[in-house]
Length: 113
Length: 114
Image 1 (cartoon, rainbow over the protein chains, first blue to last red):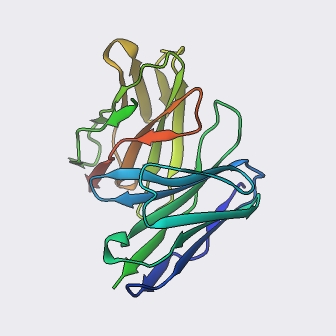
Image 2: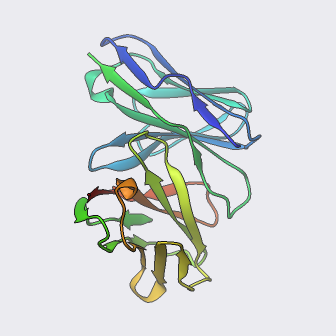
């Protein structure tokens, strides 16, 4: 079975902390994504990567950065966590072909206190 | 600009009722793909179906069916004889041909009561 694994299901951090969310996929997919899910707002794209060391901003990149040093791993970094970054974070991966679908991880519920 | 609208925020039905989840999309692209995903309480979004813009055939899979109408830019999802296990948040999404970005609706939370 194909798999996208997010390192933590629940995470509690303090304001100002640097936070790393890790995502690993075992499908050799070229593209990886970080979404944020908030009630009533659906999924909003934070960053995506179409290749190793390549990244592009999504719709809400402010306050976040990403790292993709290896094809299978895509990390989301909150440089200085704030309470408005409390949310569910979803990682997804996608094969390069046009018709393909996203595969999702099970999400990380981050609470910033 | 691309946009997906799911106007129904939350729907509650009693088991065995039929229920339709609405999805309306906007795009100027002629080639695009539409998707439905299910998000159960466990959190992981599970793929249900995809449709490309050239294929307007409706599809049925067991109790699930999808109605794609380009004339109204809609891709609605019907669950027949709903079950408690259908309780989840359902997302409709649009992907255009030239980009790897997916545009998601805000989701519809379906509650199926026994």
